[in-house]
Image 1: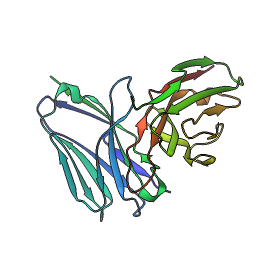
Image 2: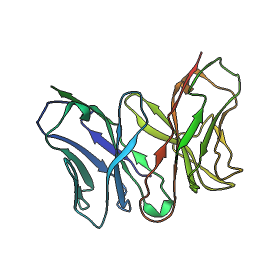
Image 3: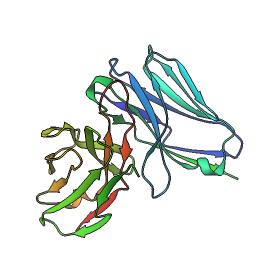
Amino acid sequence: GENVEQHPSTLSVQEGDSAVIKCTYSDSASNYFPWYKQELGKRPQLIIDIRSNVGEKKDQRIAVTLNKTAKHFSLHITETQPEDSAVYFCAASKGNQGGKLIFGQGTELSVKP
Amino acid sequence: EAQVTQNPRYLITVTGKKLTVTCSQNMNHEYMSWYRQDPGLGLRQIYYSMNVEVTDKGDVPEGYKVSRKEKRNFPLILESPSPNQTSLYFCASSLGRGMGVEQYFGPGTRLTVT
């Protein structure tokens, strides 16, 4: 079955710097790659997603890139702010399975003022 | 307000005492799922349901049961809880059709089994 590896497990940056989180997946049939943000004590919430027919997607300060050949995708956060501090999860899915997601292990991002 | 609700939010119980965690969504979603979250392991799927009366095992189903008698409800049942089931549990729902659909998570249930 699908396996998703996420790195790093923790990441500390200074406010204003960029942060990059990387994920690799094993199943070449996966075609949907969402990223979820989980603030302390809260539920995970979708922040951005990308489908396999697109190589890059951007939404203000966050962007996701996908390399289907290498089977990896990355989350990029620019101009980080303290409120970006959270745990970020990548996930992969085959869309025809109606939303079954396999999650990575999570990255705890800390943005220091 | 569109939402996924879970009850209880916190539960401390003893080994072997059957318990049920309820999950309900008001968005008419077809797909519902249960995850457990443990440090360093991310979110692992326990069971999922594609529609009423259709359920299937996720990645870590041992020790859990589910049922989907109504579209809006998807309870998680621990027949004989053990300490290794101490975890944070999330229910989630999504439309379930097409390629790539957002999953909406409930607030979580923190379970401690002593």
